Length: 468
Image 1 (cartoon, rainbow, N blue to C red):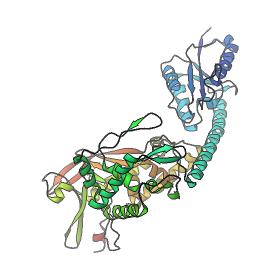
Image 2: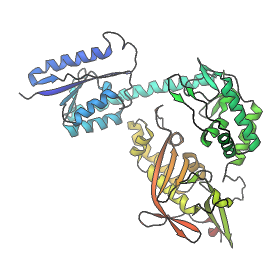
Image 3: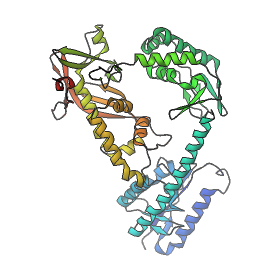
Image 4: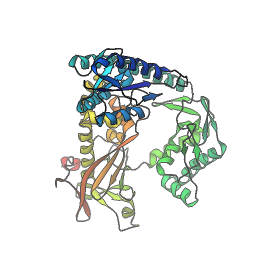
C-alpha cells in the first residue's frame, strides 16, 4: 500500500491562551491527528514536523510555519495538508486561489477535518470557495468595526497608536511632550519661517550637525539617529498633531494632547508651504501647467526646475536641473517637458491596466466584489492619466527620477487606494516604484527621451499650437 504523507497545519489569530499547556493549537493538531489515524487503512500517516502559527492573521500568507510547509510542498515531500477548518489556512479568497494553484502544481491535496471535503474534486473546490467567501465576509465586517472604532476614538481626540511625531511620546490614549525634542520641533518651524525654504533649513541643519533624535518605539524598534531629509522636514511642518489636534481621513478634531506649535505659527507655515510649491500656478491665464514640477529629479538627486522658452507664439516647456538652470554648474539635464510627462503618464496607465497585479502591489485583499469592480475603476483612472489631468496625476505621484537609461516613478499607494475606493492592510507598503526603460539622446541643447523600441513618447497636443 502506498504511504500518504500528511502534514498538519494549525493557526490561531491572537496570542490569547497560547501560554497554556494545552491551547487551541494543540486541540486543532489533536483533531487532525485523529482524522489521519482514521484513514490509516488508506495509507495515511502524519509527518512528525509541527506547523503552528500562533498569533498570526489568516489575511496574509506571511506566516513562518506556512512558509515552511509550502517549501515542503514544493519539494514534493507532502501529499496531503490537513487542517481543522478552512479558515485556519487562509481567510482570503485571492490567497486561497494562489494556494490551490501551488498545491495542484505539486500534486498535493487539501483536507478540512470538520468540513469533510478536499480540493481533489470540483465540488470540493466549489464548497471551499463558498466557505471562504463567508470567512472573508466575517473578516471584512470585523475590520469595518475596528475602523469605525478608530474613527470614533480619533473624533474624541484620542491617540490611536502608530509612530508618535517627533516631540511626543505615547501616554495611554494621548501624547505627552518630550521637551528636548519639542524644542527642536519649534526650532524647525521658526527657521523655516525665517528662511522660507525647506532646502535651506536642511542645509543649515547639516552644517550645524543637527540630526534626527534617536528614539525607541514601544515595540522596541529604534528609529532616528540620521540626518534630516527634506521629506522628513515637510512631514513635520505639515503635521497638524503639533497644534494639539488629531487628523483622520481629511477631518481634524481637537486632541487630548498638549500643543507644541501655536495656531498662528502653524497657519503661517502652511501658507508659506503653499506659496513655495514649485510649478503650481493659480492664475486663470496659465497656459499649461507643468505636470511634474516639484516632483522630478535627476539621478544625482538634483530637482528639476520647470521652465519654458517662447518662439513666436509657440511656448516650449522644459525640465532643467536646478544647478544648470541657475548657472551654478554646467552639468545637468534639459528635457522636453511634454515627452517626459507623456512617458510617465503612459507608464502609469500601463500600471493601472492590470488590476490583479495592481492589487498585489498595493497589498489589498481581492474579494469577488473587488474583482468585478476594480477593472472599471482602473480604466476610469487610466482615462484621467491619458488626459493628463494634473490634479489626479500629482495626487498619486510622489517622485520621478530620470537616469540615463531608466525613469523611476514612485507612486503613493495610499493616495491611489483612496482614488480607487479600496481598503489596504495596516502593514501594506506606502509606495511602489514603477520603472520605464528609456534612454536619453541629445538634440541640440535639449535631450530627447527614446524608449527601448526606438520610439519617441507621444506627447499630448500643444494647446498653444491648437489655438493658432
